[in-house]
Image (tube, rainbow, N blue to C red):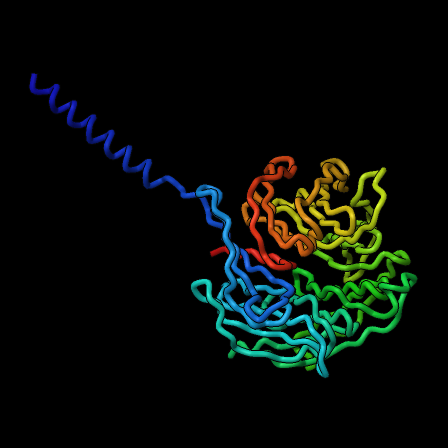
Length: 378
């Protein structure tokens, strides 16, 4: 008879241990954080921090650095203790690049240096995060900087582009719009909307002037190349042609672009103004997302076909606002966060992990002219 209480005690202990183990294994839902770049209309606006907690139905935004003028593009280093922003402005020496320390969601100014070209609009980090390259849109140039151990920037080189193309209102001169390093760090791709060219620069960090022209790809007249993005392995390049609303896909071979596909961002019967903006790749590399402004105000979704490895359009969905200039995906690929410059808001889409299809949600928050979204891991 004494064996029954002992057995019950053992069973109780096992249940308690199992319950404790289950609790320890419970993984809390992530809280997603993003830096938000904006265009500013007053001194109390600037760089924002967006936090999204789907489990608590929470989407909030706060200004973490004000008084900066038009911080329309920004990025953090991999350690997430450093942020580099720009001031999209014009002066004798162009706009500015600004370096901040980042800790506990706060920004601490470290350095400010001219961009040496009007209206800087894009910043690229070299893979080892030792160099920074800024694209000067109105200046039609790119400026290269060294990031010193003190986290200050030293100007190394400015390269001026010349030329124009057929769109008289948008392509009257060079307009450098993005500066993107290849994953191996050997090349720098520069999209120039004004000249209808994508320049491939060789990169040698040991040189005092580390960037030199290697090859040039001429896009179709009137395309207006805006942003380019490498696949993780560096073998494929995705380019947004802003003025024709085209996603162009290239093979990247020995520093040169080899055309592969041109895919429209709009449905066949669409009529109206367009303005392609941003391109992103899903975490697994199987889907590509592109935003389109103008009268389209949409996001186009493309998937990789298994047999050919080419891409096809599977969805064109309303972006949920006006002027979807920028968007980004959460690191786990569960959500897409879209910023609307025209309607002053940021909205959230759910993303199907298998198909990549987007579904609108009710999550939405007001932000003054949000134009860039940068995800943080912490």
